Figure 1: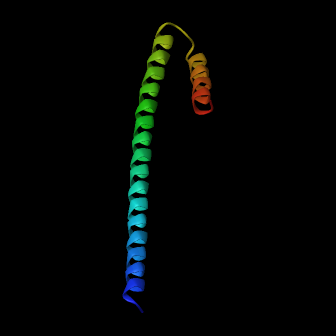
Figure 2: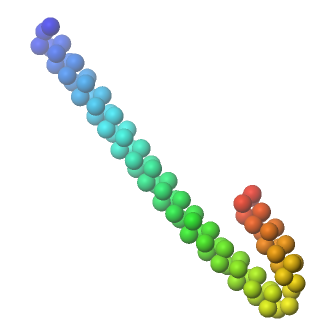
Figure 3: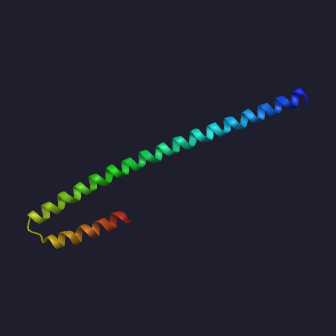
Length: 83
């Protein structure tokens, strides 16, 4: 085996390893972005739930039938989950 062929193989091996490292780094970055987006969606859901709860309490305290409020909340939840 010539030295040139060995150098080519070594270079090719190093290039494949570098490509795998780059791909792994990109996948880790993508996973971090997905986790961040999930956390943001959880925060949004909590805020939305708090807003809906406040509206429901206001409606009940204003004299609206609690069953009507519950029906409206279910309809709103369906619209939120299934846009």
